[in-house]
Amino acid sequence: MNTQSKVALITGASSGIGEGVARLLAANGVKVGLAARRKDKLEGLLKDIKGKGGEGIVIEMDVTDQESVGKGIEALVKAYGTIDILVNNAGLMPLSDVESLKLDEWHKMVDVNVKGLLNVTAAVLPILMKQNAGHIFNLSSIAGRKLFAGLSVYCATKHAVAAFSDIMRMELAPKYKIRVTSLQPGAVATELYDQITDPKYRQNMEDLKGQMTFLTPEDIAHSVLYALQAPDHVNVSEIFILPTEQGW
Image (cartoon, rainbow, N blue to C red):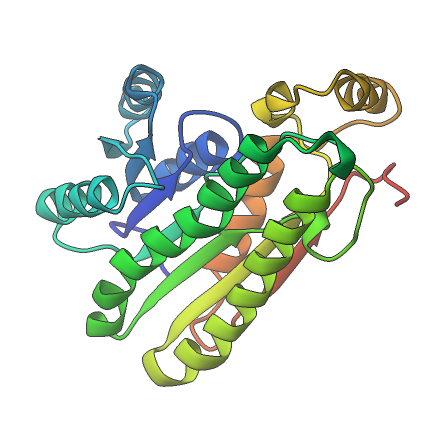
């Protein structure tokens, strides 16, 4: 895909991978719809993007709320006429053992990581189907292909994303020329770990930072751009990207 003047919706764009993807896509001519709940963060990001010659709009969006999703997509289409690229990035990762029974955290992960992704996909897909083109990126994880103690529900949600992504590719690519890519990063330096309330797993993550050089959001953004700029007949269906020092 030629990225010039294309339009992208990026969820979870206020920080981390979403922010990194937004910055790189905007630098490559994509008009970016910056979607998240933290409007102030999005406005600061948009100011930076515009200062470097990019273009975009701020979309205050809660992916767990279908009405919020619908209004956000309407605003993006009103601004630019269509949507060509969807980056389903919004996600949560509060780790804990199953026996801790952190039910509220479990439900939040399912609501954002799975239901939120489904809400946004269902709202954007008719636009892509109508124009018979587009590219959807779904943020899975190394936890979407491997299992880890303490990540039971998170692994479950990311396995669901990986499965949904590949079946989307099977069904949509041949019929509508919509490419689907599942991104599966290992350790990435983001705010994701700030959500961990369990002291043991919070310390584990801090210790891990001293054992390897984490990937940056920009590293993930470059993998998105690589898949996006592949020839139209090429669908990069999965990108499994890890720190060199990550041996698991």
